[in-house]
Image (cartoon, rainbow, N blue to C red; front, side, top):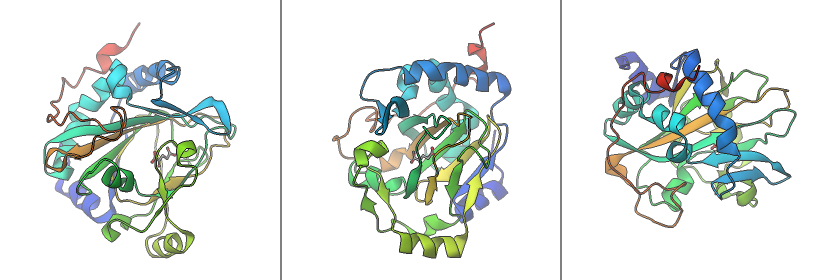
Length: 265
Ligand SMILES: O=C(O)CCC(=O)C(=O)O
């Protein structure tokens, strides 16, 4: 799939584009079936909710150890748009699966940009990174969707503060203070990024976003594939493999049917 000039212009202006049904329902099912095994891992790559250790808050690195997520990251439908938007070859800096289970157990995310920890800890020079948000479940107004401030990426790296419970947030989340957030939201508005399972949003890493906790009865899993431009490779080795991938080889696409082929009868 190739993006149109209008889609690229929309991304450059608003900071994100949403493509409905980028994955078909068979592919969605393969990914949904793979979620329990990912979340059952016992290594440090799976971070639990601090107030509810039974519940996984996020699993880093599923593309390393789960074939469906590896194939997802290499689909031409995913890779080609990222390369077009970043105007470069890309590698996968990091992937995360946020399951966001229902009944309030899937916790919220304070308003933040994704770039600060990548820049400050991993040594990513520029915000030339895209968070590809793959909806594994339906993301509706009631399942605590991602909330984003359009055009906020134009403000560059904003002042932010390392969250005092960074470990409980899942990573070194830098949140934005209320005054700055109010100004940005008054100016740009706040939009929910919603769509059925199989929808994919391509989001610039400096777009300010957050989400509430999920009080609906339904799980709202999203897989984030955070692609970096090869020319923008990270310089630090502080964080482990599952947070800061050190293989900067330009990614090659697999056959477009590779994920669908994993359907079991
Ligand atoms: O999945 C969510 O609701 C938000 C996740 C998020 O903002 C993040 O992982 O940086």
